Length: 208
Image (cartoon, rainbow, N blue to C red; front, side, top):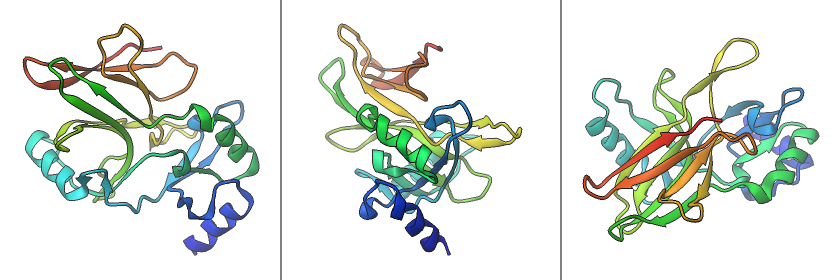
């Protein structure tokens, strides 16, 4: 059944058949595609060197009171998202050149840091799922930071996962590593920094 639905979507969209989209989007009236209603089925088990097993072990060590296991994980790409109607797909195609999902930066002290926008699903139905920021050491693959984007309240009053997180390279003259945003052209931005003394990645949200 699901294969038939995916095949039908791809038949009229401009996304290549082998793109294997993971997040299916329906735009809301007077909104951009990243604010639309989304459903997802994540089938991957890794984002670069970080597997679901490695991430689950990291969470068991670092998340003390609400740890969970991750059973599905993929790096986000432009091909991860597909519109379930022509209008939504046209929006996604229009913004494809502006979508950025990973950035590498040199931290103070010379450490190479990689940031990735990923999509994931926890193993249990009540576990977190959606988009997340995954920060690793570019040379070793060590996980340095994991930040799920959480949920938002949709037009029907339901709490649903956020499935889109854009990632942008360091700005000129900035001491950040890179920054993230849940939207384009809205001013919302979270900056990602590296504390060389503590060898620690941290974030600061600057709002809209």
